[in-house]
Amino acid sequence: MKLHGSEWGEDVSQQYRELVREKILDPLGMNRSTFLASEMAADSDHAVPHGPEGDAQESCDRDDDPLVPSGGLKASARDMMKFLQCELNRGEGLTSNISEATLQKTWEPNTGVQELGEDSEEGIPCMYAVGWEVSEDGDHIILAHEGSYDGMTSVLAMMPDQNIGMVLLKNTENGEDGDEPLLGKMVSLVMNTFQGKDEQGKRRKRRR
Image (cartoon, rainbow, N blue to C red; front, side, top):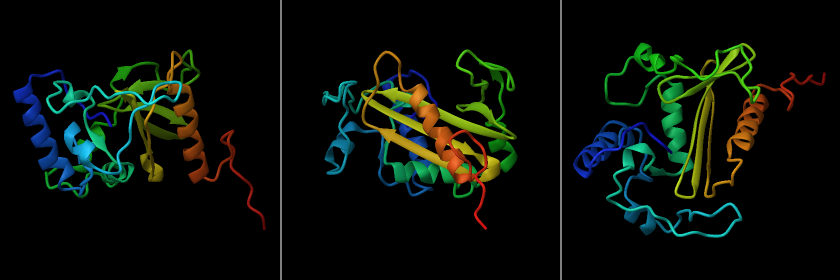
């Protein structure tokens, strides 16, 4: 999972790791999350990266990676659900005094990929908030973030007004076409399922 950061030196990266653990990981009980490649390797149940053809590949990850703030968190799906649940609960569980209004500010689109309500080339209207891609599904807003790093891919998505969220982690990266078309379909499928809709987004009729 990629948490926001920048390309910093080792001293600042160390401070970043400590800050995220103090403010987010420990308060939320994310005990299977780490920025250190050595800690992940010591876990007997960790994923190994694979290439587009399914072949295992050697990880280039290391403990002193200066890119840690830009995608270096290694976490289980269960731990990432704790983070997502915190978002859906408007910051509940964090020891820091983050108001619901402040958290929701990070959900507000401020950079236009495409204006909401207008079709992009891929047919998906989208804008960008603070770390979240913002798109519409009917009357509802979907917030999502995806990224690939070192043979791994992660996706977080949520529909806050419906209290629906999903985490997808996979230990491979796709080829030239990337993961986005498939991941977008999976997000839509999960959101539709929890809203009682079919694959086309139409609400299923209940049997009486």
